[in-house]
Every structure is written in structure tokens, then in C-alpha cells.
Length: 333
Image (cartoon, rainbow, N blue to C red; front, side):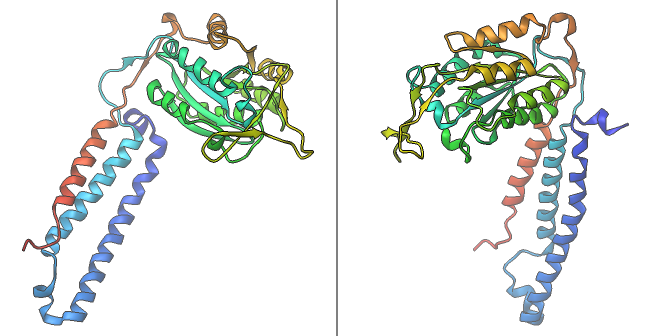
């Protein structure tokens, strides 16, 4: 029987090779400990030792190693039992949210960033059955949440996405697309797409080229513009999050950030997707258009997948660790 038939992530099996190495290290550690005690105490070592003997210590080692082995098996995601039907309409979707400082501009109120969050929350019910990941980006991209169907947890993470979530400032659409593709490359089949929410100021360039490469790999890239052509000043925030003025450029003038839909249209076109401008229901309209093009699954192409049973070895590992901690080395007084 092959590893692929037993595990959903068989490529992680080299982790198990660490177990014999760890066992050998712990044995050497125990022997060195006994030798040091014997050198100091001599024949009286068994009476002066604070532990209850090597047998109990050996059992603790076995339990800890077994718990570690089960934890590694959980990473491999064991599977057994009958295949289960995947949720109809399910797909893999990466939401790439711009958290650059320009997203704090207040066109519309309360800010571009808050509008993006609100629209994502409002659209949450229509994402049921999809696996959704969250990427925050500015001058670089950072994965905030991997693909998951736990949308409540994902939206909690979404609430914490702000300019402090990414160390490098700016707006690099290419980094956002490439981060989304890396997430989707680890997905097991399914229909894959990226939705970028940004004000479209592609200061680094290269977003359209990255979207074209994503399209070649079977990933559709959509874009949603936030802000206005007229633009707005960027609030400068103090240490407590209070506004202390407006952001100024090197010339000392206040910076005005404007929506640049041209770069977003280029990204969406290169990525085989669709561009939507700001407005209520823009996300819903964008994904509804994706559904019409067949990016969502239907009952005709629904599949069956093997269920992941990682919880059972993980739970057993936790119980073994509790037992291992209960086998204290100290004498009871």
C-alpha cells in the first residue's frame, strides 16, 4: 500500500526520520546524566538521586516520543473510511488585501480599508463551501490565514489587518499575486482564484506580469478598486491610533492618494479575471460574474474526497503528553 493511499500529505514523511535521531540523543543524555551522578556521589548515588529510577524515566521518554510521532502523523493527515462528497460549489480563493497607508484615506468613510473589511464580511455567507485564504500586502506580502472553511476565524484575523501587519510600505501588486499563487499551489485540485482589494497604486509595477504568470498556472486573478479618482489625504496616526495630521511627502506637502483603475484593469485582464470599481456590492458582483464564467463548481462536476483524520492522532498525542507530565521524577515527601 502506497503512502498516498494512507495519507493526504505523504510528502511530509521525512519528518518521521527525526524520531530515531531524537531517541538516540535522549539515550545519550540519560547515560551522561547517570555517569555524572556516579562520578560525584560514588556508591551512594542510588540513595542520593532525586528521581525514582531509570525505569520511570524511560517510560517518560517513550511516551514523549510516541506523542511526537503521533503529532508528525497528524501533519501527514491520515485518512480512512469512505470518501465524502466535497461541498458543492467549493473552490479555493485567496483574498489579497492592501494594507498600505494609502488605504487609510477616507474616500469613502470611514476609510478604504474599513470599506474592504465591511464588504468582505457582508459577502461572507456566499463563501460557505469555499476554502478561503487571506494575504495582507503593501510593499511586500504576508500570509495571514491559510486556506480554510472556518470563515469566522478568518474574519477575526481580517479585523487585525492594518498597516502594521506588513513591515515594508508601498503597494506591490506583483507580491500580492505571487503570494496568492504560492498558497494555491499547495491546494489539492479545485478551482483557484485570487481577489485583490486595493486602491491600485502599483508603485512597484509588475502586477500585470505576475497575473499573466498566474493565469498560465490555472489561477484567475480579479481586482477590486477602492477609493476615488479625486483622491484623499492620508491620515498620519499617533502611537495610540489617533490622527495627528496628514502624511507629508519629502517635499513637505500633504500626500493625496488617488484610485488608479488603469493598473487594476491591466492586472485583471492579464489574469483572466474581472475588474470592479468601488461601490456597494462590488465584491458580490465580481464573484457573481466569476460564477457565470464557471469558476465555481456545480453539482455536475462535484467530486468525492477522502476525509482527513488528523484529529485522532493529535488528540492521542495530547493525552500521552498529559500522562508523561504526570509521571513526575520527584519523590513525594
